Length: 155
Ligand code: HEC
Image 1 (cartoon, helix red, strand yellow):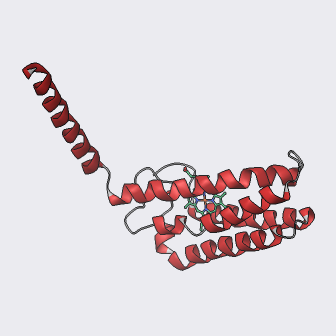
Image 2 (tube, protein in one colour; image 1 turned 135 degrees about the vertical axis):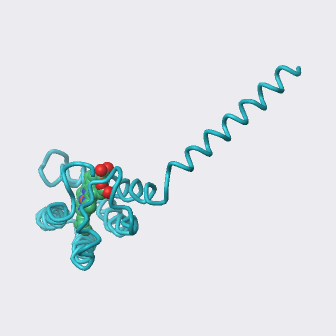
Image 3 (tube, rainbow, N blue to C red; image 1 turned 180 degrees about the vertical axis):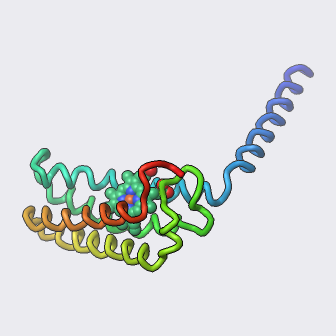
């Protein structure tokens, strides 16, 4: 009995120690990096089926396209919140220009939000040709921001 209790206490102590270490190592900046990357990953996930429908690799499903477009428009508002000051180093590909050219970075975010909102609006109509064109405009906003503000390697 005694043995069991002391084992329990010991594992409790070890667990607390482990959590303590994990907290000490993960700063608010680290969480911010994980948060924004997760946001971009979620956006990519919802873009997938729309891209496949646009290419004809998947039958056009108006309701699914509309749901994904709406979700994408909402998600596009999130990653910017994760670019907090001081989060330019670590497991990130964000360039220093994100902070040194904050106005330009904001404009690039605004462009993405505008184009994804237009896509969501158009998706209610369900005209695939119009959606293809607008999806292309959305993809351009991703690409042009990446060219300016994202490196190929983690810094
Ligand atoms: C305003 C600028 C901007 C726009 C617009 C933008 N991105 Fe990014 N994206 C970034 C930056 C900066 C990073 C690097 C983030 C990091 O590593 O901290 C990134 C990273 C990513 C990543 C890698 C995430 C990871 O886990 O490393 C993906 C995927 C991605 N973006 C997809 C997209 C898609 C899809 C769009 C368009 C719908 C988009 N991005 C629009 C700036 C942008």
